[in-house]
Image (cartoon, rainbow, N blue to C red):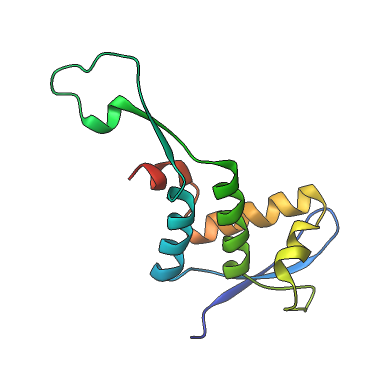
Length: 123
């Protein structure tokens, strides 16, 4: 399926990155699954108050491994090319100067609607 793309230029090194402007439901579901498959739930020490929702009685923690895997998969799904090459977009993106990497990731989050990742995991 052909999708609309956008081209950005990174601020530090001037890398030209082509990004998909949206992800499919299937792709978003896969990323969310990666994040939540290893969530650790811990019951809060606070007593339950009457009428309080059950989800408020637990703390959750997403593992660093899940965060890394989901970010890698997001890059693979969203980045079409870097400097005209479609080869190894994950490694090429990860090897960018940190300012350029952060710029690309912020743009991906903006385009795909993942700015509130924490809220997505909770729901």
